[in-house]
Length: 67
Image (cartoon, rainbow, N blue to C red; front, side, top):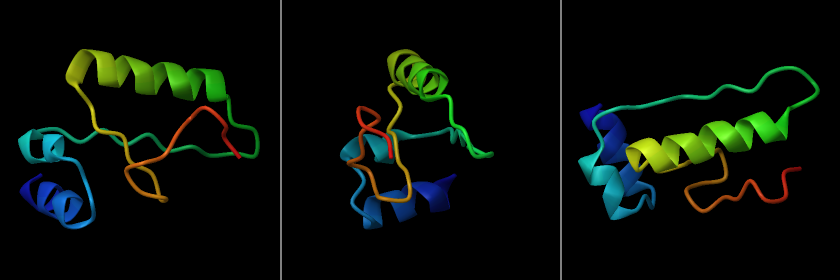
């Protein structure tokens, strides 16, 4: 986890990354993504655990308009 935190801080992560002690990875597969479920999972994680979201585009992504 320490290496993940260091990587996140080096790659533009917000200060909240420095206090992280858990990593949750959500892997999307298949050709149809249920964005309602993805949004629900991300909203729950951020509400319950003060999560810092990240995807392959970086820390400043949005689920408001998925591709």
